[in-house]
Image (tube, rainbow, N blue to C red; front, side):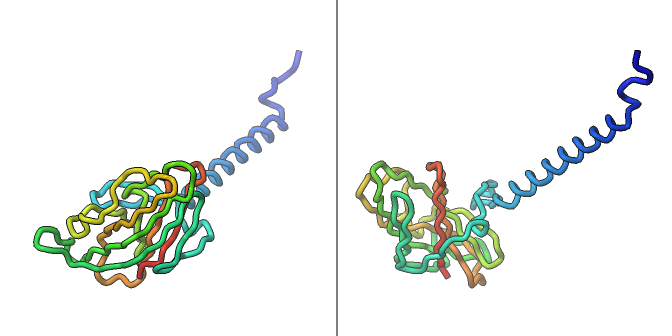
Length: 188
């Protein structure tokens, strides 16, 4: 018969402490890694959305009329327009509309799905906002749907941004592919 049992052995308590420390360390590192690679933004309706923070991934930032190439697509900004709205549609106080004209080409062999929620704008305050639907660019506004293989679309995407911002970057992310495409375009 064993006197005192396993709970009175010193090596049992050392092993238990080591296992607990390893578990806590692993959970901490895992939580810190996942919180650094994703950020939350509010879209124009106040909904919270997540996107992978493009600053965690070293990538080129494309300029006006510079074509970005990604798996199965090419994209470039062809024009940038600022607007204080019209009689029917005005931005909130202290804000302005930024209308970004974009050319998207499907160079792949299958349909390329695109939608407004694929685009966000990061300002110089490091805040990110989703694309909005507005009457300012209603005739050219991006419509959700698929671009056929070999086809291209000239469209526009609107954002509501602070009037005093001086540094804007448009982010494109693709929710549909396994290797999420992420492109950055310098807007201002």
